[in-house]
Every structure is written in C-alpha cells, then in structure tokens.
Length: 67
Image (cartoon, rainbow, N blue to C red; front, top):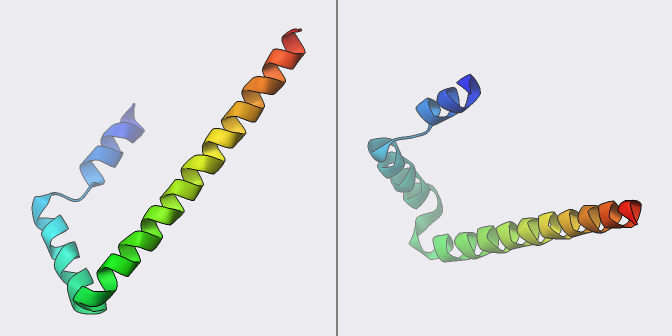
C-alpha cells in the first residue's frame, strides 16, 4: 500500500500538467500534435488488444486444465 501512496504523491498536479502541455507545444508545434496523439492512441489500442489477447489465452488454458 505504501507504493501506491508514493505513486499518487509523485503524480504531476494541475500546474505541472500545464507546464508539460506548454513544453510539448513549444517542442512539437501545433501541427505535429494531432499526428503525435493519433500515434499514441494507436499504440495504446495495440497494447490493450495484446493485453486482452494474452488474458483470454491464459483463461482458456486454465479452463482446459480444469477439464
């Protein structure tokens, strides 16, 4: 439980998020951000699909063992 508390305390707050967004705007410019976010969304979707696939394979294997 201590690790969760440490993680929550180390998360950026409102001011930090504003500074991060401003830094991204300065570094990448307004035109690159939609392309960057699209790529990030695709990566997150692929990760979720892979996670779900592995989970279903593990569950199927456990069902086979019980039978």
